[in-house]
Every structure is written in C-alpha cells, then in structure tokens.
Length: 160
Image (cartoon, rainbow, N blue to C red; front, side):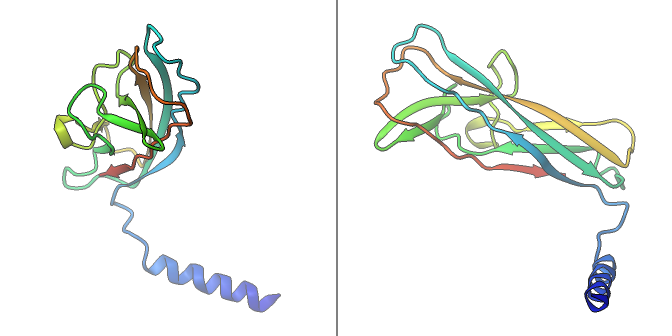
C-alpha cells in the first residue's frame, strides 16, 4: 500500500512541473445538455422549437490584454440559409438550425457561410469565469420528411 501512495505522489509532483502558468486563461466545456427535438409531425403549421445549454468554465488570469473573452463555435452549417443544418435518417433529411437567441434570428455557427460563433466578453480579471449559454434549436414548419429517427452531430469548440 505504501508503494502505491508514493507512486501517486510522484506522478502528482511531476504533473506540477509541467502545469501551465497560473496567469494563462484556460477554458473548456463543463457541461452540454443536448438539443433534443422529439417528435416532428409532417406538415405541422408552426416550427418545432427546443433549447439546450452549454456551460463554459475558465480559470487563470488574463495577461497582456488576452483572455478577457472566449469564442464558442458550433460546426455543421452546410447551407447559407436560415435552416442550413441537416439531420439524416438513412437517405432522408430534415432541415434545422441552432441559434444564439430565443427569437431564432442569429444562427450559431463556426464562421462558414457567414454564420458567426458566440463571443463572450467578461469584465475584470477574475480567476474563475463560468459562462452559461442557451442553444436554441428550430425545425421549420411544413416539412414532409421521411419516417425514422433523424440525427446530426456537431462539433463545439472553445477558443480563448
């Protein structure tokens, strides 16, 4: 038992030697609650709206004017229109999109097709910053997709 404890302490000590400086800001996705649309009824007269959430955790201090913001990019835009993402069930597809606002007017993208990422600026030089961001999903009305379970996978990236 003592040998295991010494090995653990040695590994922890080596890890401290290679840790990033305390003044550098580091951010990561702490939690993602997915956007799950549920059932979509063909030719329904109104859009199907849902929301998910991203939580970002940052620690460390900003230096030389860097680290006072982070950018969240969501990939998957394949068309410049308002519903430029596609879910697939076999060969069938269902148009949808993800938005930064509840009004569903600002598409959340990664920079392709003019769809911009979210930029979160924060004041001060706090050691810990937590960002909570809603992701608003919408499937437009009056679509007639084939039957099946449609799905899509997007990449979410954080840049400091």
